[in-house]
Length: 296
Image 1: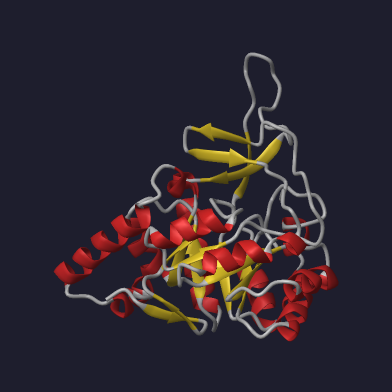
Image 2: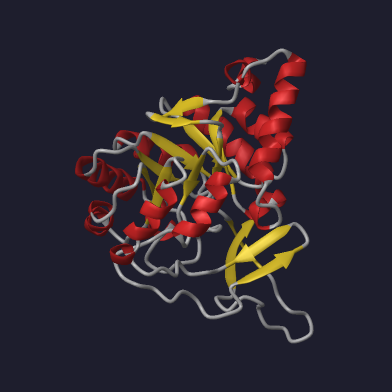
């Protein structure tokens, strides 16, 4: 009932692991895949090793989590082995990659063999990367076009919500040849220790994830669905099956789950079971509810 084909990839359900959560090693990616995910997305990797920002890099707040990891990674040169291990689960593996300009993205993409790529042009706290790249529609189109021309697998573009109008960036990705867009990455945020007056995160500010950003993500997915001709993958604040249903009704072809996995690795199986029961009770299929909110 929940199986689908997304940009040519066969998924047993529309639930995927989001980048940045349990995505650093092949073993952890494989474990998530075996826990019911329809696909898994790796931690973002780049052209050169990065240590990331100084600690603290993550803090729990009332409405979710703030993180400023700073894109720590071993570089793509040491990462293909992890992808190969993850593929042993028989679940699509999507490589999240980043760079500062088109050639850097292409270098990384050409050095890896995943089932698809997710271009990270949306990390809100890495100088020279992420949002600093992804708020420029011209650059987003150039990066997408360059990677799409260099690889033979689907290319997804992960968009930042930290813009005035996300549809302009989505259109740029589509014009560059993207097979899908992913919305959204984290929302810029900050926390301060009132006892000392110092920002809590080592980088001072970071990205907010968790339940607080779900309404923002839903609106972005809704707007992108109306504007684009390519699939939209929703992410942001999903913790139960009703959240997934809401994203699909807004126009998400599939979803990615991040923060909630940290508390419950079995969330994929649990949500799948609840979704199937809900759809059966309503006598709906996944296709029936896809974009349903646009029909009223």
